[in-house]
Image 1: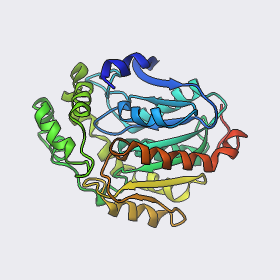
Image 2: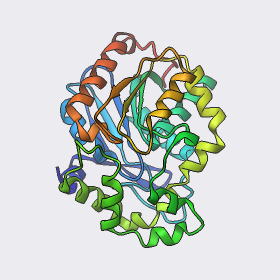
Image 3: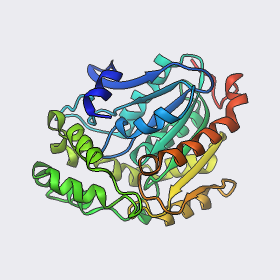
Image 4: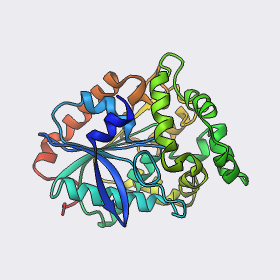
Length: 301
């Protein structure tokens, strides 16, 4: 699927004077909300959407990513992205419980939503959540060279010098050796990053990693204490969100039984969409009866 095809399948949503690109499909069953990671976009989910069946689906590009606006002076906080998520979910699925599937940076947006749910401040119901391959426990993570450069004192310079060959090398390195990204996928991801100069914003977009330190107690506490149905899955060949992070998450929530993709890396949904989607569908099915009767963790609306 090429970028223009993906653009044509989507729509625009205005949130706080910014244009947000989103994909929405009606259907039957539990609505699925797919949250992407850094530095890519909702395009990551295109193969999953094709395989997930008849469920309603919503996915979108966070501000600063993909086909959404990329304001240069914006402060790209995860709280802002969580506010955006709330607004879109309430717009497309009013009064319904949703199943959230979150990857990479999106996992921290999801844990913020969980924290709001615990506090009674979330404006929709959650049927269940699947988190996978996110460096939620930052002290156990192994950031890429690109991430280290963008977080460092010369981050703005590193962002300005970002180019496609460097991106291809760095991005390919987080996939498993058995399931490398295709040249076409790499080209599409770079095109989406480069739109509106988004590849020059990396030093701003990477600020979510600092937030993982600042709000560690809040977000780790949400994993430990959230009363809903939380699932974990992991590509065990991930060199960034390494398996030790999964171990730590299980320590926080001993009741969870994670799914381990032993031969996949940081992008299981791209590396093996058939296997990943099968796991996602199974997890949604496990919470489906409760969700359809509106018995999620919070009252929606």
